[in-house]
Every structure is written in structure tokens, then in C-alpha cells.
Length: 152
Image 1 (cartoon, rainbow, N blue to C red):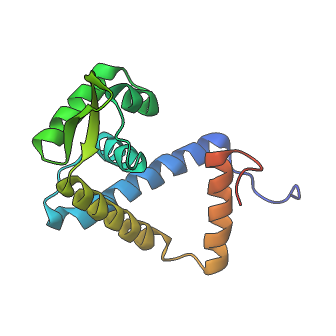
Image 2 (image 1 turned 180 degrees about the vertical axis):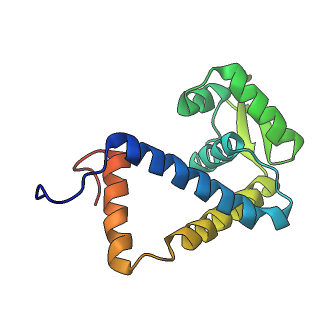
């Protein structure tokens, strides 16, 4: 970089990231509002984690570890998702004392709607970028999310 190019301070970048995150969240809420889905970002993460676990539903402690929160915080999230019919508590076949959290059909359809809203929000926000700019942004984001040298 030449000395004549303007530099962006870390605090400026941090502010831009915060503003972009808020814009993404607003756009996602906009795409969800007609679907009558009331899921918080934390509940959305729980649904994604449960889905990611596939055929072995996670335990509450697994969810707490993945979310980096205390188990009682997960209980509150799971209680709300269970009340909405998105998840259900199921007994562990190996131990009656262990409870696992499984997605319901409602939970799977909620996840599909959330993913669709996220894609639509991203498309709205990325619309001004060229294909080359999107590719560059993708590489930069991969580096930030995964660390240097880990993206493909």
C-alpha cells in the first residue's frame, strides 16, 4: 500500500461492521415479518446447532458449550422453542437421566424460513457488489471467521 492511499482505522472498521450487522438483521427481519415467525437470534442459533447435530440430538450441556453460555440460559431458550413447537425434549436411549433436544417438523420449517430470509437479506445487501467484489469479500470474511490460511 502506498503512503498516498487513505487508511481506515480499526475503530472505523469496527463501526462499519456493527452497522453492517444491524443492517443485515433489519433486512432479515423484513423478510421474516410476513411469515409470522418470532425467533430470537439466540433461539435461531439453537435451532441451527440442533440441526447440525443430525441424527444424534444434542444434550443441554452440548448446547451450552456450543453457545458458550451457562446451562440455565439454554434451558430458557429451549423452553421457549419447545413452547413454539420447534423442538422437543427426548430421552437418551442410553441413560434415562439424560435429555436430548430434537427438532420437530415445525423447527425444520422455521429453519428453512430463517435460511431463506438470511439469503434474501444478504442478496439485498450484496446487490451493489460485482462478482469480483463478492469473491474478494468472501475471501476476506473467511479469513476473519476461520483465521489466516484456513479458507479454501
